[in-house]
Length: 328
Image (tube, rainbow, N blue to C red; front, side, top):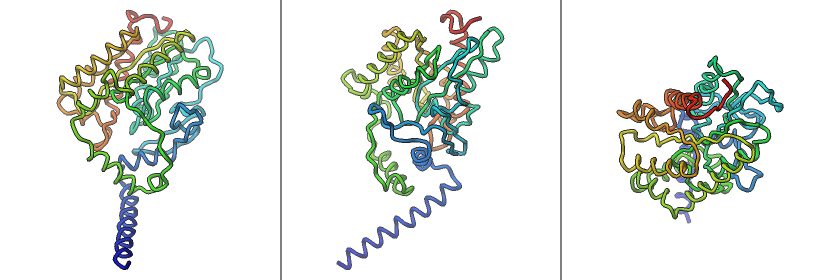
């Protein structure tokens, strides 16, 4: 019994010291795992929609990764929209994950904000353009469809852009309400480190398996895109997919590049226009993919990568060979 109590005391002591140290360190240094925990606690809530695990809490604001994230009344990282859209306005609703949100990037440097600024500086476009940043972290294509479906009559977009990242065919399960993981920085850090180190195989092989024709996540992603396509047709809204590659490797990995082509070909077979950002990102970061990251331990795209993505979007939307997205 004494031995058990000693072990228990030692365990509690280690956890307490670890918790104190982790909270002290994270108050000075942005630690990815801890910032994600804060994000879930401060800016997210459980969704009432049974098809969603979580969504943003409207009107919240918090500093994460050293930058302010301010959400409007619809949970977007934007100023509030006027419910009544006037005749001089065109709206682009971008739906996606933490990449669209602009994790670790100032709002003005997100690709949605850069795109809006560039379009409104184009004197040939006769309408005011408002770009809606509908990005939410830890979401996939199923989430994106349901989030858009719930908001499309409020945002009234003329164009829907689905940001599709290479891992958007992952199945995201609803997390159980684990009090320890929710409130303990140290436990959350250890848990995520364990998941990382427990990963076996290469990232390329992981993605290849994800996109096997029999993989449930990939089938659900395709079904969600078909639903989004049908919704956009019913509402007479133009739909475009913005394809985002993995940010760990831009060196021309044949397996990854082949997989990108397979995914894009599938979308094009569905008669959906795809903007592929791989070439622009690869040309800039081929020698060192880490130069595209927001931090040394966080492979989310930084402001430079966001600018390249925005340029690809802008060039496509303003090229009249791709159809008339705006009135000139």
